[in-house]
Amino acid sequence: MASCGGEKMPEVIEFMKLALEQAKIAFDSLEVPVGCVLVMDGKVISRGRNRTNETRNATRHAEMEAIDVLLEQWKKEDLTKAEVAERFSKCYLYVTCEPCIMCAASLSFLGIKEVYYGCANDKFGGCGSILSLHTSTTSGENVGRKGYNCTGGIMAEEAVSLFRNFYELGNPNAPKPHRQPVQQT
Image (cartoon, rainbow, N blue to C red; front, side, top):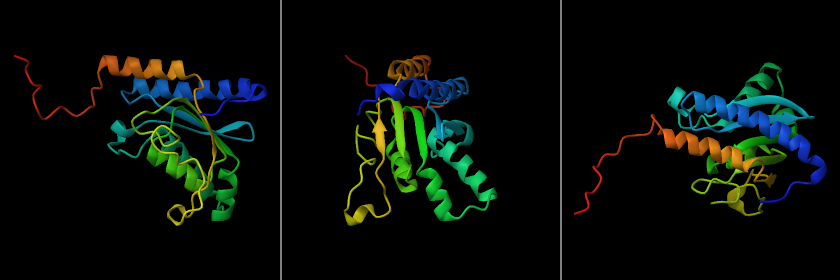
């Protein structure tokens, strides 16, 4: 986790607050509370929140939701693949939790410029907690992936608080265990 330069910090905090707003919408919708915003040229160009329960689609993470909005918009503008790649290379992602392995890899293939995230994702993190998919390598297995800068710990307490509140209430959409808990004798 890298640190964020002081001169850029007020802007980073403002965008992270917007990501937290999306996470609160997810929370209110009984989704795992993760939210994000995509920013280009200092303006929010897309927003996303977890929608996996609502859509019954495990890939509908906040990052994927925000990316799909842009892809649809840019498709309507008849942008070429090169133009889409150029735009993504100018985008910054602000997300409340470290991107999971799926999202971190997707961001790498898209060639995003930079990611700022709140709390670490100790179970599925793709930006250093489990894998480091944000780093560029030259090995053959990573053809098409680009590295991107990643800074964590931005408003992490607020992000963790949302998770804590969500799981204390109990995730009503979590699968029920197949086995009964073992009784201690």
